[in-house]
Image (cartoon, rainbow, N blue to C red; front, side, top):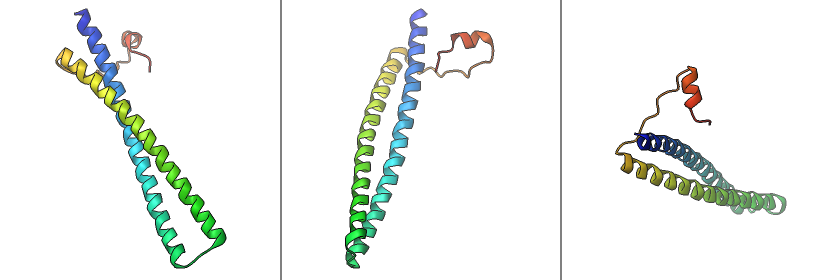
Length: 123
């Protein structure tokens, strides 16, 4: 019985880590979408500047803005890769514990009494 309790505790912790990793990936997806929208907007402005033959200060600012957007996309891409790797590790851990236990324990909502507060893990 002690082994199952330990496995259940580890599975609940793995489920928490999986949820956190999933939230991180979702956040990175939103940031990537925003960066891609900014790039599309920048491309439109660049095309307009080329067609209108705008030079000097406006062109320099446009180039700098494009470089910043591309740098941001690269940062988000790296963060997305890291977040996806963390999600994969969390999933594999959760799947292994599911295989070992035969189920995924669903944590019960915390009760406001002192006994549950003493046994609940710190966040």
